[in-house]
Length: 388
Image (cartoon, helix red, strand yellow):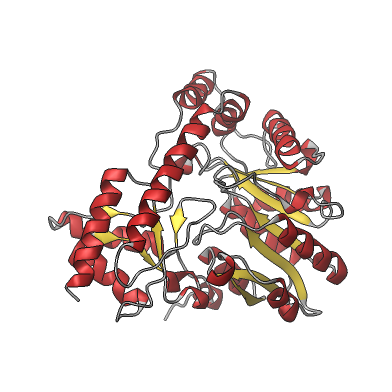
């Protein structure tokens, strides 16, 4: 009997896509569903960005590009990151990938060996733990605590660092909680990274969706440029999830390895997508500002509504477009409650347990949907609880 490689059993998936598929099946059966499960902006890509891509295609910009990315796009990204993170970045430190997920793979493949340890946030983006397992390293969960606004306590981090620690993954603003690390958090992390000599993968894909204050990056801290791999991209900020355009900033030694991995994985990122990415960064940021304001309005509306429902309490998230309400007052596990809301109330959202063991007892609710739909979801959730 033919068999698959054992390593495939170590890869997991994203529950958001599983719940979305189940919700679509229910819709096909005639059930009305309010979608609060998927993590993508419900805005259209700006017209000028689409026009730039279309013009590039008409001009014949449809062939291979450099594995590391178009020089023009890498230069624009370097300037953008230099400005927004207040640190000098050179184009040869920039790696361009089809979406930001490859950066997670590349960083772990490049910096971590068999049996090495990778510390990652829990609850956190499921792909972190999945990739750590896949390459044969040991995943070490770092609990994010509601008591500190879904950040982690530095003492918790200190306790789990060992002589096998090769990489720490941080994500701020954070998926699924919306938590944001403070400047003092980042400074303490930096001290530990330098003291114990490990790399930091800083996932900043929600960098332009911070509602209280400015985005802070560990890349900006003295001594961290040579040990930080910063991940960002256009998916969330410019409503370009399907365009698959991500990038990283890292030491040139690592960027060179990423280019080698790109040759082996994808060859290159689409040329016209990168040209559209230049347009997004170099022209008006009004679209980003408008989306930011709409998300903030939705956040406040959703949090207020959730806190008015018996059995649910919800902190105000400082970034991204997710809330992470506590549902331990409901007489079900969060997974059971999530499934109940989908099948009985017609509301698609995610159980916190799908983001790690420390997410148990919570739900992830995306507010990348209209106020009207959020209001309808709140009514359905309240009614569903009353019928348990």
